[in-house]
Length: 118
Image (cartoon, rainbow, N blue to C red; front, side, top):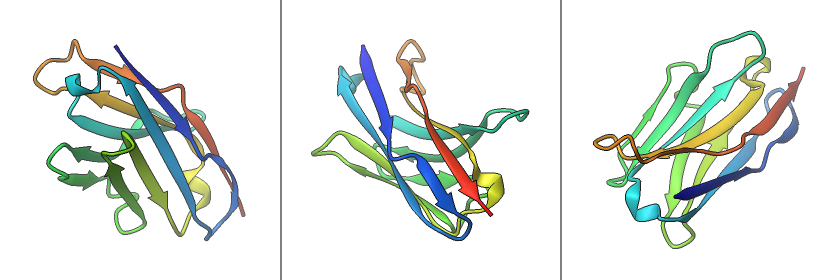
């Protein structure tokens, strides 16, 4: 089992920045890819960013150039640095840790709320 705990959400003005953290514990050897998702009210869940064990990253077009995903292996933590925030970035952000080749290992955090004021 893997436990994922997000933190760092809050209220920020449009144009501002916020850094989310996702701390992993437990059998972290069983996962090798970490995603950040978000879900805004009335919208479908959206994949925002991905980082693999090899540090390959991918971003949705909606955040590319503004968000950066990174990891600190010593701390078993993945981050999402969000800059130039827009009202449409407001959502609950979730991290996901999984093994693409064995989805029996697929874990989610509880989410952290990001609110953007205009």
